[in-house]
Length: 75
Image 1: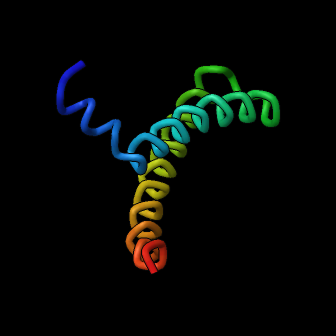
Image 2: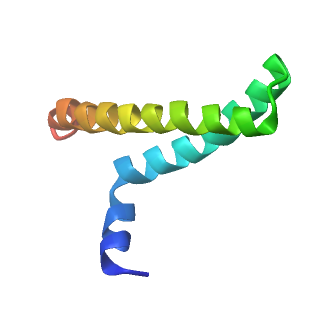
């Protein structure tokens, strides 16, 4: 595996965000098909857009959370 990819995946915020986003894509597609009766193609498109945006949002929140509360871990 490339050195930059290993370094990237060691970052817990990035790793958690990726796992969250992939799971969210599958869940969102399944929900769209079951709840709305949308075609799998439309459900997949919807499931890709919204979770990717949420993945970035989760990463941003996780980084901020760690910065804010890291000072309390060592107190």
